[in-house]
Length: 156
Image (cartoon, rainbow, N blue to C red; front, side, top):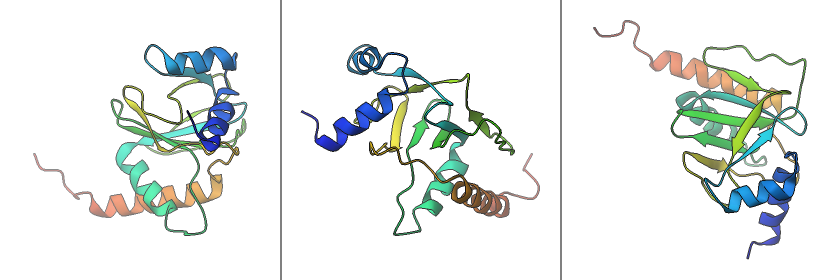
């Protein structure tokens, strides 16, 4: 049996589905993932894994703030940050992709991994998402740190 928090997070996440009951059944059977529509309750900003993991570490620095839902796709080697929908918003950067209105995102249930998808920070059921300004700042800082670590001239 799921705790009340897990049940609340299941209901919140399933609310993005066309039919929440079908969504919950998909999580319990088959591959354990459901395709959910982005752009209504949330958008997803997907970045390369190395950049995403460093960004998430930077977001954890503030002890008073818990980062929003964050998903990792181990096969695609990408990290997805769930943030408020913003149809006019633009995110620019190498390897940065935004899934908004008209996009569909494969999502496992908040209480377990499913195949290649796993929550690093599962949704808490309250609707809390990443703050876009904080996320942008952390992405910039992580990108700058990775640029310093990158070799100036790749070995041949």
